[in-house]
Image (cartoon, rainbow, N blue to C red):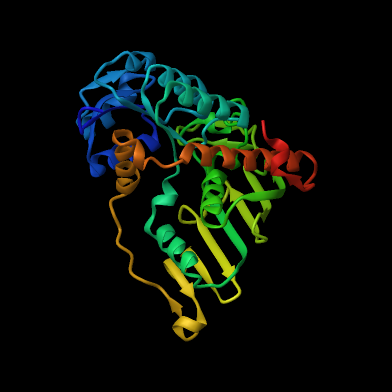
Length: 347
């Protein structure tokens, strides 16, 4: 790329678009040229807040622009495949909001299209960029808790009340696993390793949801799921996913237990806590972490990779691995909780 400033288009003006726009503003290297939304009225407040001059209501118009080098796709899940493949064919770098797509096969089609076009494809997993996750990675690499044996992950919220599409199976195929669970799966793959086998159960426990505008919609996809993971390194993990918890958790909670200690993330001990008696005399060690503006590290890394292929991260292939775990969760649930090998759901 001949210039250091990347021309960016953000497609979608929902709640996650604000995260991306804030991260772009903090991360540098970006000039947001255009914001896409279903209506101008929906996009106008965000455009004004972030100083974006152009609004479009047809995402295809963005792909024709010479001043747009990259697109962030944060539209509803069922639109990801069409938009991402079209963006790849137009030669645009892509940051695709999780989940990558509604199925492993669709994700593979996006991945292959980007490879054929020779464009950078990244999938957005915001949690891996949090400082507590970086700290946990350092502790694990240092062997602070010895051999990792068990993992507990929680992704729980009250659920979205601002759009009916979240509860339509045609738009969010795997419900809570697609919307929340993929975050925990990504952290598990990053911090623990590959998942080999899955046992899972899911259900719709709240069949009707009231939206903030007063409408009541039927829930067609699972709002609750619990999974057990067998990892390639011998560790065992449990993963709790819910969109019906009034309190929920602070984005995620993760506990990692080894022979010589434990790591807790986003718990009552704070963002990151280490219990390692050999190191800290049977007391929890809770270091102060440097907090960057939300999204800054994430978007700075993405933009750096758009400019320089040598520093790109393999988030698209990571997302495919995660989608295979999602598919195994779905298959296990259909089989009444029977254990499923992740390799069995490969396309």
